[in-house]
Length: 65
Image (cartoon, rainbow, N blue to C red):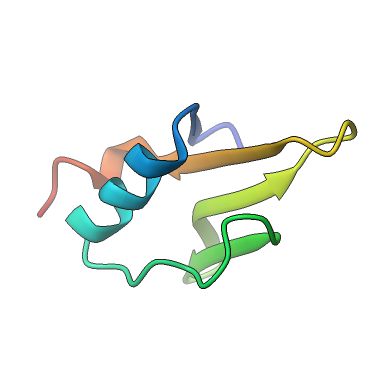
């Protein structure tokens, strides 16, 4: 996993973080999804080996806007 990403345990909070940085929420929280800017992942939704959905975001973005 990318070391610059922080796991967010709450799906609703993850979506709020996306809105706060000006990103439109993905259509589904259950599908794998990535937000990439200049070849760097800024946010990710990914299923783990057990089928649990995990949410990750680049925390450095949260204080910028």
